Image (cartoon, rainbow, N blue to C red; front, side, top):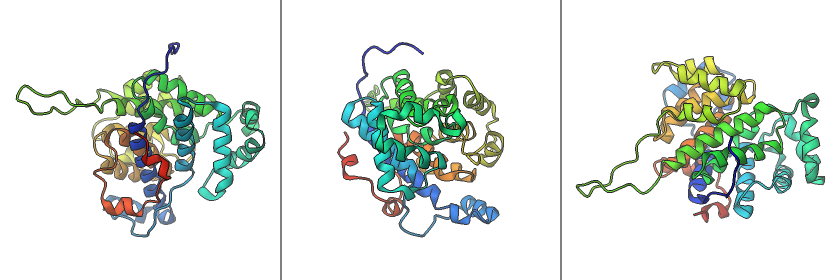
Length: 324
């Protein structure tokens, strides 16, 4: 990874698109959990594209923590680690019932009292190994979109954001992979060049998104999973991909990120199709859908999402709409 010199020009509008879609994916995915006692029924309803009718669709800790990361970027222009520790801790204490994992229930209250203790407190989790869970990955897509001008800088800032809660190298690698994917996806969105006949030409699809992400992901199981995902035949179904790559059932970064980015790469221009495909994998479906929403939405936004979906989704804080 190269040494960073100057901070690239931020892209707050891409970050806004990403957080809007991340929250939608999170809330949409969470709606399927009540059906998971009957997995066959859940899978059949997802395959039938039966939209969950209950309202509202609240989002979970995925969105709450993503908002924390984004607020620090908006205030400081970079990942200020003590400030992020304080923000994530305060966010947890304000609503601990958002579905946080056991590690965060242990870590975040201690950081509220001593935010600068994050290096030792985070390393102490899970018998001193640190967390290799998917929490740092699920919240980081808006950061990648913010730094769409420089995927390498996005990777470095993702590492810094992950370290505050996830000391294990694979917890960090998952965040790096998702941030790079969102950076590359957001980077595709630009003013189209006028064609010779005066019409606007659409941007070309990003070639080999997974390969470009894998190139910037640290070695280990997350990167290995991405390489496995690259090799899957084009005829692979989401359910087959979930069986082969994992879809978050173990709540680990390596069991979550490769499948989520495989879904995002196959549906880079269609957020709704991406979310349905991701839901077919079942597993930790709010987190996989949050990751996919944040990555794909960094490019598409939510303008093509049915109004009924957006009307059901829990609103985001007012400051998000001001990002531009």
